[in-house]
Image (cartoon, rainbow, N blue to C red):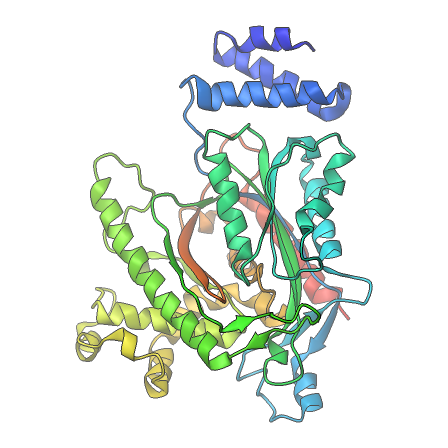
Length: 468
């Protein structure tokens, strides 16, 4: 297939010609003609000309998660056994933290092998050819080299297929790196630099702690996400809240050790403060965005007032399950102070004049709010905690394993269509963001919500049946 022939096909920008051009592109990618320069030319010419250059079609829309693969380490520690080993009171880890099991890696695994495995599985299971990937971002805080990125290690899967034109790099900021990687992938697809290929985000970590109170909050896991337009799980445009600051709540200054330095009390304070700030900012932006786009319909968030009742699920970065429950209660307190209409007036009356910034360390209030928000927690957060309960803290993938768990908690894909999910990502140091995704029925696309659910369910089956 010549460049001149392809140019002729798309020169008039007619739909029939474009379909023929795309068939030619698939012909090349599927290996019947393996000239890598034809592949690169086809991708750049077809997609850039149609999507970005001529105005015949709009820029890509509904960008989000097309497919995913999850890595479940085969080994785990039972948290009740760890309680016995550590000689602590029964239930301290299983009830106090809400953890059941903690994934661990074998001595022949490292972060590179985890990421290679999950990326290779994603390509195999989806049938996506490595030449169809134009960007690869990695989110991790598990470093094995101070200079060389894990992304470059993953390039082994692309170089053998004559594809070295893959943008992206590692994203590092404690548990926030995976979210930064996703944002970068989405921004690339929505930009004028997009060449029409898919983006992939790989995130993974091995969380280990020195002996002591923090050790039961370890874990391990990795996931790979295929990112592109017309997705069944879409990152909603028009509203995102971010809060960044400089603190030493959790850090790793000793490069000869895997163990972090942790100020647990400060870390929870920072997490709570970031959660409050992001939620306030998100609600304010959502209302402003709605008012600005009421007539143009350019925003995907249509509700004038955003509160917990807006979302089918509210999910958090989850070092341990109990923190997720406290976080939901904290957002409920924000809604109480705002006197949101889904809460009875008699309940909101005593909270309406409180300054939430002064209520970070009030344990009595926290217990009261956990009890008041128990039903909301069971509806909107608990369905997303199965992987966290049984794998532990995975650092960068933690939040997204909660999303995966929620997606398979619903009996059918139809029950997810149109449902919005609120996500809060946090990384110590600190970096945090709040944003939302929506589940949708896709048309004329090979990637569906049902396929996504099947992939997650396979991982759940491995978790339940194949670990020792």
